[in-house]
Length: 549
Ligand code: GLU
Image: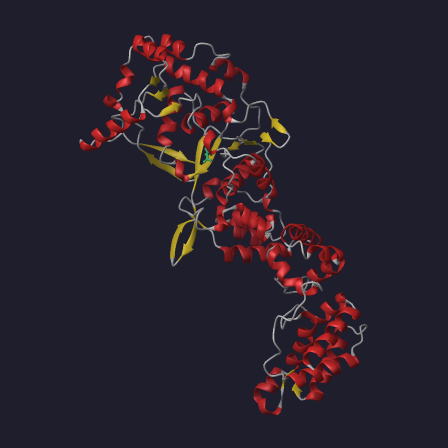
């Protein structure tokens, strides 16, 4: 068979040859060791933590080495395409500090290796497919679904590996005339790889994350270009990664099983393949067992979730880095103030066996990270979150933003700083007592304090309260009231002789706290009252008094 003629028959008038494209997409001039990475999401309208996890690896690899990170939209499956996905991907990732250097952007395409949407690269794939046909590495296949299905049944009955491979790939032998006749009939066709893997031994390849990985050779005549003229993932990403001069392919471990196909396509072209880096799945603990995070069961897999709850991107980045490199936490301990970008992230320090994603750990990390973020930034993030997710409270929050700033700062510069702040929704819940609109009594009087006693405490407090008292003068007054009313000043005294006291000084201050905040727990009460101002604080205490009388 004259494969050159076959190639000409299948792809008669292409604007450019693969050689032309090779010329056009010159090797990049980058510093030695610079990594060129790409994220290749499909525009399905859903962006998840796994995408961010991979993107973070791409980003660190590229930017730590002086390289380039590309956004390529893998939209060859037109049925799954969802309007607005590209924008969602770009915005969601940039929220977490992932800004692409090249590829699809909100302002159009950037870079000279495009187009960066696979659906616009058909001419390139056809030129590439044509070369494989010429070299006897690919052929047209006219088999219909039913025929493939019948073949599979027959193979199963014979206990033979199902699929189009080896001697079962009968269309490998079609003559030029037969192909011509079918094309003339208008029969649909796909382009298949003519695999040379049958009979080959397993072999090893070096994965950037996993080290040496044992691989079975591919034997299947996999579809490279579909009947609609668009390529499959297997073909498209190989061609694109080569022509975009990608050095590292970071992708999920679900692609390990089809890696042999990708390796064989590279071989067919005679191209050196980039470094494959297969990340491991994100896992979660459930009933003592680890399992994969699932789109259906776990809302925390969707990036939307983190947006709605108002997690700080800094915290998510920090936690992802902990998941990515096991030595990161130690580095962080030694460099508490250093930006994460300074950490020497290494793909060969990533785990190949699953990363356990734990919400509680995320919260702990978040508490620490928020201590390093200026209150101004915490507040502006909170206000932005509130505009979207707490619109009823947002106007008062904006109006009181100077007060909220002070409120958020309480206890943060102490030797052992308070770690009350985790994420926007939680912070909102933590401070919303402060807003008149949201204020209500959330807790009950302390157990040891009767209603009447509480009335007395509040009356005493209001009678002596002076806004200008400093923290210790303020507390002295609480102590005086406690003593006069028979409450112990020290916990120890009360514990030793409980029958001598009505309770402790903390019961007394709790009554006041309840009046001001509606809660029995709050950051430093003197500070809260001071920020609130005399008028609002005493008005709350007086109205509490009314409800108790
Ligand atoms: N479009 C593929 C996906 O969304 C990309 C995989 C890759 O990065 O090669 O899974």
